[in-house]
Image (cartoon, rainbow, N blue to C red):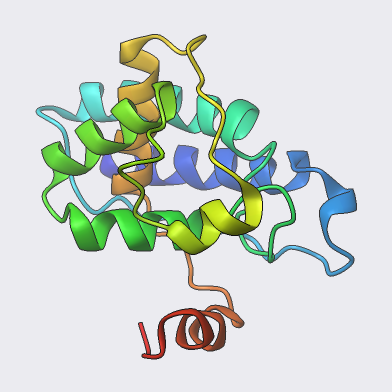
Amino acid sequence: MHIWVVNLTMALMLTACGGADSAVSDSKPKPVTTEAVAQPESANQAAGANALGAQIFQTQCLACHSAENVAEKAPPMFGVKDHVIKAYPERDAFIQRVATWVKAPNANDVLMPGAVKKFGLMPAMPQLSDQDAQAVAAFLFDTNLSEPDWYKAHYQAEHGAKP
């Protein structure tokens, strides 16, 4: 069952890469490497949660957040996950933070002030149910997004240190 979840997640992510706004960058996006790193209570729950989270991620998140390329609308998803997981390394805390943030971003509680300065505060997504927001957050936590080639230099330029 675990292999099925990983394969489904990979297929959805590879499909998602083609669904992003191609006008955002001239370079071709690389496929996102996915790998389940944590399991919800059962394999059936993992499959259902990750499939729902992957679907919402593809249709809602990738419209603004690039999976691999430097984005023009919002910070790339690898960078978002990197910042959130450093502040919230435990799965439940990560999921709570992301699910709460996407529904009601707070300018007084940002983890990426440079991104807010560059792109503005993320618009709230009240159309997502709490369950959908949590599914996306769980999918992000459980998915290993590959580090883009440019990310280390970008991070060092922004933060003065290597990630």
